[in-house]
Length: 185
Image (cartoon, rainbow, N blue to C red; front, side):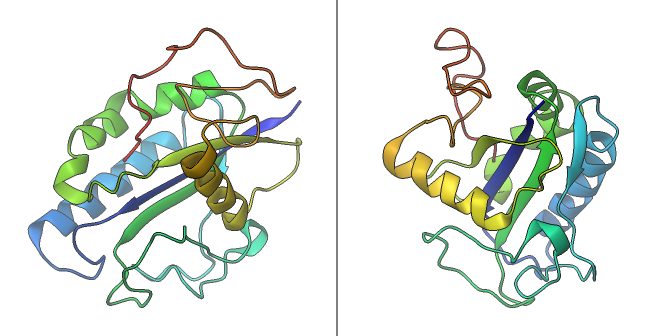
């Protein structure tokens, strides 16, 4: 049975290295969210660098998740001191599990604060696609899907909660099933 890959991307108002209160709150919230989501039914795993240095994304060893990549529209820093983005790459059993994890509990509380931390870019902030069981999605896959979604809209290989597709490529459910806004961040 195929698994569901989820890539999220947001541009932060401040670099990850910022020591201000909003950045500290963002990190604290993110750590709590990951602890909760990692135990959520339907969660299979997420990309983590082998060497965990706060704020180091570019050049980190991501193992099977591939080389770190970001959308073309990201135009901020790429060093530990200047990087101003938050991104995730995760794997799920199905869309309802991912929806429940994102729109309830601690992650829902974090979503309510997203505009404290993130810029409003006009770009989608998440994309889903199906992968064969046992396959590990890559950062490049996520970026390609997000860029496709921005340019062309939802498709079986790049979709959102609001416009989902089944593993066989057919639209899933009626239009409007899911949140009214596809932005995760």
